[in-house]
Image (cartoon, rainbow, N blue to C red; front, top):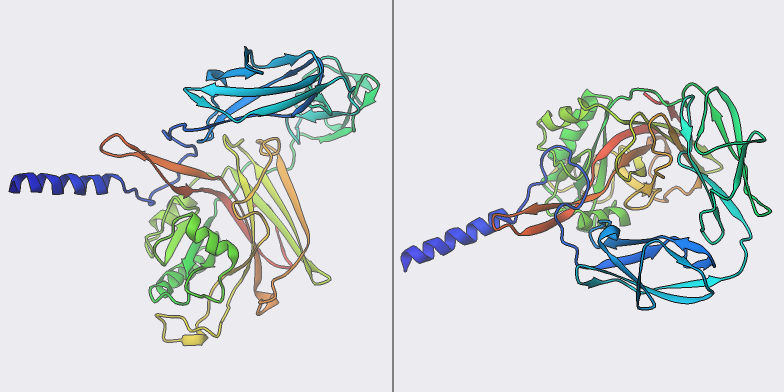
Length: 440
């Protein structure tokens, strides 16, 4: 009996150990690993089409996997191919199945109403000499009519794709059944203005709180790292415990990324927790080759904040990337004393996050803009400044490009587990409000 109890104890310990995962370590790729598909979603570009339209449908698993090619499609209960052509007016019910799973029901409305507008779209938003531009023409029912449309460049009919052989201004227009698209213009040069190399920088994200007695050493380690290298930036996420500097985003992130211990300091994303004050992890990030770079220009106009962000790509990402833009304030003191410090209310908090001007998980950069050699630009105008700012002279803007993904792992018993969400930061830039920082 004693032997059996020992075996049970060892088995339980092994199970607990196997079901845990470390957030330490270097960057990892995105994706959902071996997460099982337990539900599917059927979607299409438009639920209203005209007769003769050939409509393509997409089936997506709950783990974001594309299972279209392995799925079956039924229209009003009859099995059909995908894409499917609707030749008669009416309302149609569509359902997909995959591995015993049934999707939501889509309703497609088909009518004989003629198209009233067309759109001309390109596969990229910037081109250099030697690049080829592929384009598509769609009507307001989202039908692709590229083969039937006529596309001209600077007044001459062109084929698809079109290759740029010289610098200059190129204006494209599409026509189809008496309809004309908006004019799309590209200024093509030997290069698009994006540098070929960028300096890799690091953002140290500190989850902290005035209530946390263990947090001052982390803040001190970040300050020392920043003072020793101008390519290291810091930001303080104040969360939990009635910290007066907490904002909705920091409360959300603390829960979303499963921050269970304070302080927690991330090195360029939630995949790497910093073992401060050791600089090994930080230096590893700084030694990486940067695939993107950022430029910032900021100004206060009539009491509002204007920001222009430029993201240059020297490599095309193989995943969706997001832009994050922060407003931080340096050298902040509060009426709440810092636990763990003898300085009390005189304790100085560095780079406190005051506002987030993008979505909590970032604003997606269109894939057509995230192309090697291209520069993506985004302007934020007349932004409100938080009311709790102590000193306008201490304001900075931090912008960075990141991905987002969920880690999965398999334990000793070959059971797949899903860990908390993660992200990696491609690169980061910082500037004092009122100043500008070019690509570097």
